[in-house]
Length: 141
Image 1 (spheres, rainbow, N blue to C red):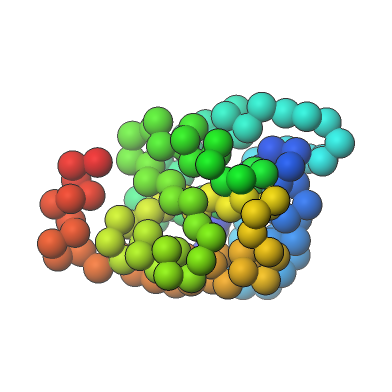
Image 2: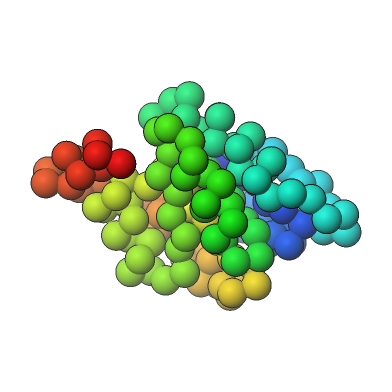
């Protein structure tokens, strides 16, 4: 069973919980918080914590959820070995893996419908990096 790190801020908490419930039989999640939607938290703290875990092993993947997906992505992309992609459609999700070898998907709970988020996650996890001409470009990141 594939292990995936997952984290959210207060705005992304409910979607994070729905993701875990939907995929719990398929994937093992390591939930790094937050643990409720009532208390406002600082999303960079949760993004940085998850990035430390994902960057330790090239096989690790992560899911970050906040209101727009943007804040988590910006914080995550400050880390070496992290390529976080804001995913909102099946096409941009697939390309984030095929061409950019993204290792963290970020989702906006206020902007992305639950069923689209689920499809994006499944596609993100199961799409392999194409390599080839993209490999040298990813190295430049």
